[in-house]
Amino acid sequence: MSDALLLRKTTFPIIGILFCLLSGLLATAQTNEFQLPSGCKLPFDAIATKPDPVVQCGNCGVVPADPKVAQPKALQSQAKNDFCADTSDVTAIDFATLRKMQASSKASGWVIVDLPKRDMLQGFFKLNGKNIGEGSVVRLKAWLLDAHISDCPSGESVNCEQPGFISNDLHIPLLDPTVAQGRSQDECASVTAEMSPHFRPASWSQLDMKTPVKNVVRVTGPLFFDNAHKPCAGLTKAAGDEAPFRSSLWEIHPVYRLEVCATTDPANCDVNSNDPAVWIAYDQWIKKASNQQAVQATGKTSRDAAKCKNPGPAATGNKPPAQCPSK
Image (cartoon, rainbow, N blue to C red; front, side, top):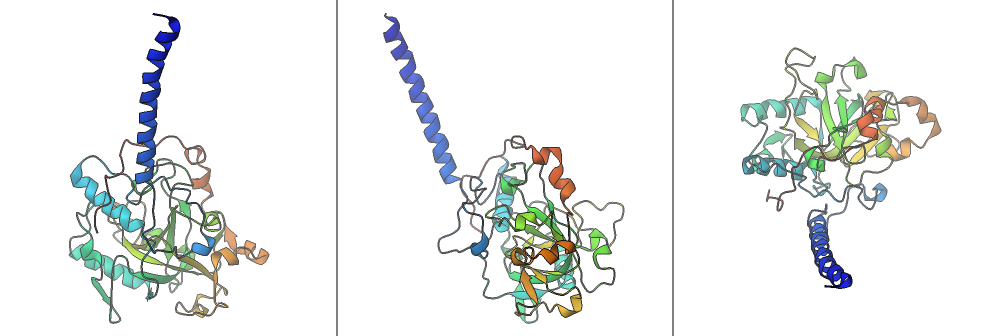
């Protein structure tokens, strides 16, 4: 057999195998891409980063092979990735409400790591004649304790366990503006908001380095029950409390809107006000040179961590579910 014929016989099958493998990879990437449901428009569409920098991570993230764990993890990630909740009906809440919701959830037996279903979390809590729960859009006035990138070295299942700043949530502990200690309150007194990496506006991605510390903020977004964690036993850290510290597992996730109060006195910042002179969108507030004196780089340590600045491969071999489960 000639060398040329031998080369053709060995090369063509290899090319065919490579083509099949490449086709399979492309098909997987297409089926696992993040997608907004038909007819859904991002609540922050005007300032969103497009195309989505984390499009390669589907709506349900990645899950372990064990089906008993896979279903709860997929449902949890799907709830975290809800960008289409009803913004026509926004409910003002406070810290006391979120703590009461926590107490009710504990009494119902929902404080477990892997909830097999989540439908009971919706509309279970009555507030001023309305029923709210997971997926209800709320707004909260608060001091912003800090902002830092979450799970940067290892990644998180909702974000396909991809390490690095671009691929992970911004974790935002919030503090009660009615308490005299202000931003000096213990983190165990906080509640949490999270900014998803999907479509995250460039201005929001500065929040960890330009955190408002002299003005309260107003955070708007759907409620999410973060049952993967445990709340602190009290409002100050004690033995047995575990990070991330918070007073309630009920959080705002993902953030739909972030605004900063124009005045430094929280009493003059009505959470229900629609006056643009009272609440200024963060992306606009941060542009003013005078406001640069009212910020701190509260998340610099997390952002500068070696594994965050130089991310490696995904942490585990967990894979996307075959399809997102029905809610």
